[in-house]
Length: 165
Image (tube, rainbow, N blue to C red; front, side, top):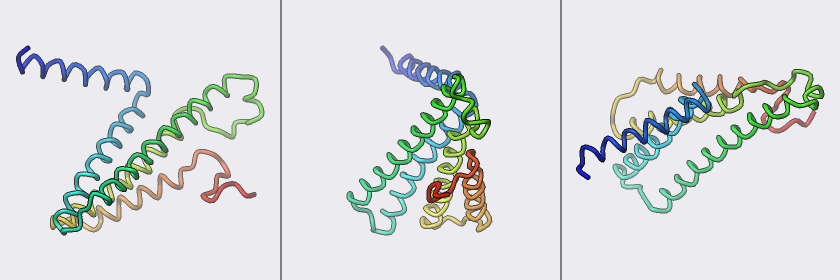
């Protein structure tokens, strides 16, 4: 098989994956895709910034990868919560929640947005460490948007330290 047809097969596979994700999650799937891209960009820019400063170590790189894995697992937990809510709301047990939990992909979207703007802020800081000028308003804007995602808790009464009444 020649290279151009192999490239077409790879593009077709990527298109199928993106189409499947879009069919499964709709626009939330695109948000998840953007998060995955920012996770990768943060790792690459963080590695470049550490190497440029002479601070790169394999131990720090592994810790960064574990951190990224934790973000992905947290996102998967949010997805599972949305799936569980959808299942519960289609049963007789839904009455006990009395409209106090959201229906849809709200938890997934908010967790995705929170991590996305966290990663964007980190990418901007890494770029600044590499010497590129970054407007301060862009960095602070990423922090503000992360805070807005934090404030958008889809469950009424949810607290950061758990619901201790």
